[in-house]
Image 1 (cartoon, helix red, strand yellow):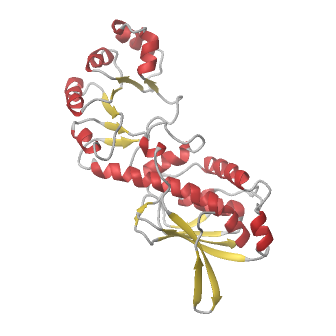
Image 2 (cartoon, one colour):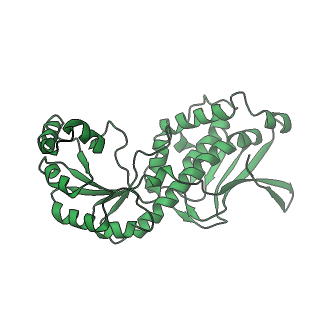
Length: 320
């Protein structure tokens, strides 16, 4: 593997379209990529080192085999630039932008060995991120015209949360708390432990807990029955999560809360049910499946071989 010690940032590695969904922290991207490249080529790529002349150069194009929403262009570019600091990467489609099958998404020119070394890591990440963005966009489209916001959960791939959360934003969704350190979210197991099954204690115990927090710390509580709503609201929580409620129960819960707290709906949300959930008037719909049940979007990296003036052949990346 070409040295990864060169000082650069992913945002410096690309040219082309800009993104309107915010940026990824450079340090987080580099941490993921360095680990992934070390895993994939701990002692270099012996195939390319054996077959490819050291000075050979190549141009490769990232092409879409299927339609989708792009996420991870900067990550793709940074993988290439880590392998070859002199590589030039042009992003042809912006993160958050929808594309059709056959669209060229990016182009990279650099040392041939380096392009081949970084190919699988770059594809693995941009395929997963784009799959998440595409799935999120499908949910966001279905709740258009309602006040409901589609959000992710902490059901992310360990080590990849920052990338997957960014992909959700590329699809038009929003992020829930990033980690356990960011907000209080008391779920059914927390409540079972503190109440010992005695629901009469719930309001006072939640009030005591809230009193320990700073005024900027968000306090959310999950409920799984209508009977829990009033005792939780009486504690002055910021958000109440209605977990696995039916549509009838959600509508009744929204009416009961009546603006006294933000309402989140969660639990087995699908493309078939999300519009009905949004129509009940909830504020947030959290969906673990945005990140934990996605199949990689079919994108391929094709090497362009310029054999003679006016003649270019293409070799697909396959399943290497």
